[in-house]
Image (cartoon, rainbow, N blue to C red; front, side):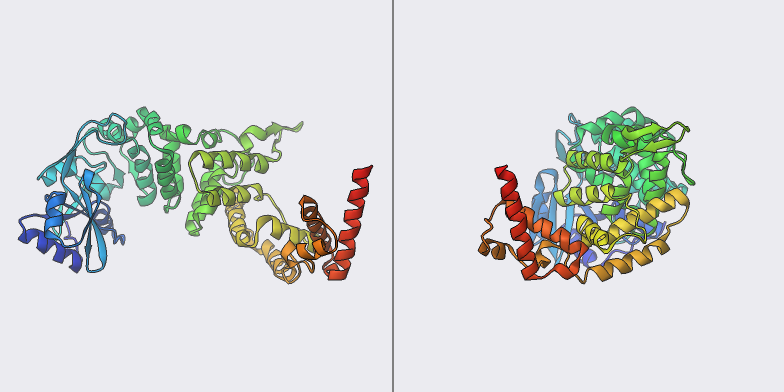
Length: 453
């Protein structure tokens, strides 16, 4: 096995540990990725020195997780996480050890880790790689295998159920038979994990090179039914699609298209959920053809609920919901300039490109290719109409102008400004202060008369 190329700064840190009578190793993902030929400069270090001993031999140490043996070493303007070798007791909550004990054995420390391909350790002085569990052979076979008894590993930390799926998606691997079998038996344990951690693993899976592999494994193992039952329900909902057998398969193809084009999390998350509204809206017409009327509206509401359940940020929730709600918008050349302006206002300038990306992936999953040429004229129209008034702020009158004309600052004023904008969106030449003030007064007077009646 090749020696790990230990960076010079870490070699210098290692010499400090060695001179004090301690060892230092690079563990986990950095070593795994090196053996696979993947760049990874995220170094996790472990040592037989206890946290207090690390603080005694290194001048600048931050006790970031000292209770569990982790400190952050600041060296030559860089930060390195260093964790003491440890063993862990039972996991009554299926997530955190009830007790952590510091030890001197690298072998014992590696034996508590999740999968064989994550249990490598590279000596920070020599670069020699330790592989106690056949991880290198599993790398060559493309297998994710739990260390020891898979049930014990998953019961220690239920998040490992999703990590199994994520590493398969990241590395384009498959789980070994026993690991997948035990994950399926214990899939219900994922409910013991916080929603924030679940979403963190989900987004890492989505942002991998092969997201469909991870999501499909979640479905096969039963994990998906626990965390996203709305998505799991898409399996078996058949539709007429060129590339897919059902809605679930369609979503998987669209996801991989997004990964192939390196699209953002917002696009991938919207694709994951864009057709979940088809389950409750499915109907069959008199000719036996399935229809999903308003599935994008229903799906957007469902996605909003799901993302709130997963404790996502408001910005992410709003963006993904908007994309789903508008993913069925289809531009035609007979759109008026006003219709184009309303589209821009509804979607937001900042979201137009990612909406198109979502639609292109949807087309790839449905028809085998993205019909990007159909968007050329639309994009040009969007550029042109943005030269005129687009929002209330672009109007030739302001709230102050209306107030000076005798219209009170109230909900009524907001409604009048919205009506003026609607008029200007259709007829940009009417964006004139005198014209708009006359129209505003007319609207105000008509509303006052209606209220009296």
